[in-house]
Image: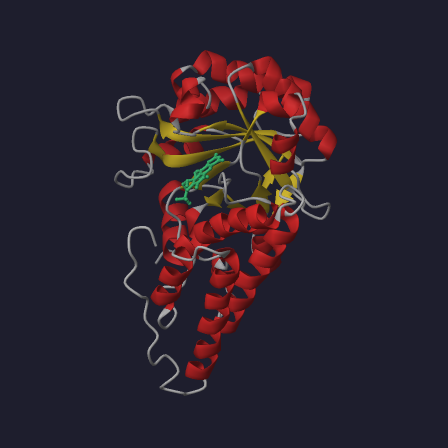
Length: 362
Ligand SMILES: Cc1cc2nc3c(=O)[nH]c(=O)nc-3n(C[C@H](O)[C@H](O)[C@H](O)COP(=O)(O)O)c2cc1C
């Protein structure tokens, strides 16, 4: 494995991001509750909200405003906007500046048909004129630094991240983040980080690298192969919310944190409890609330690092097939009770602990 990067932090405008590790925005995941979990664990230098349309924020859409809310002590924090209309994006940026966001991030990477159809997200990579007009308008509208998140290109024939990132810098962007995949790759493709390295060599603003950083080894490889200023970590943080602490420990020469079953239990249950408390504002009806919370909890569980735990695979199955939130919580409690006994040397703790053969309907 290669050594730590030259610098463990970077600057966006006058703000120091230390450590230089960013929780990548993820729709339906990086809400206030998930970001609290990650911040409380530590090692993250910057958090970003899930994306929202700039136009909806500009008109104060209630649901969208809830998606971009952040804690008063969540700082620095970036709010990500998407859209294709420079004026609406500029208006949206003003609103988030007034909310107290540290940065405004512009999405030019989303591959979803819904977002691209309206020419936002990664479709902007094909339309450099509109993309730069958006950056220009947003930079002119706000005093906070404006950043851009993009992919390496739209498809294999159009990997234009270095050129687009350069144009964004010239329009006043304060940093860019690049996911090595093209829009065509969606979430597959063979690792090719050359365009990130090329962008880093070309630009004077910070260039952040993104895509498949899931542990210390992949973080080291990303720093080595791109010379990037910092990392954006998405799915790796759902799988292992301690990933930032692990990478920070490696960068600063500290011992690796040990995360035992009790810590994972605490993280899972605290997440559900906080999620339920927060979502109760949106869903006054208990049944609807529990259904919504269960949906998000399953999303976390799908990725969460349970596989490494003894019989964690079974717990994952049980939660994913739960029809009611209290049942899912009972499964978590029961599993960790067994784990504590097992870790204390009780070989029989997991006797009879299997996932039933679930039918398709669960
Ligand atoms: C469920 C999910 C939702 C996402 N939502 C967003 C989003 O709102 N804005 C954005 O810029 N990228 C979004 N992404 C992309 C991630 O931020 C990131 O660029 C991508 O997952 C690659 O990084 P990773 O390999 O570390 O996950 C999303 C990804 C996932 C898996």
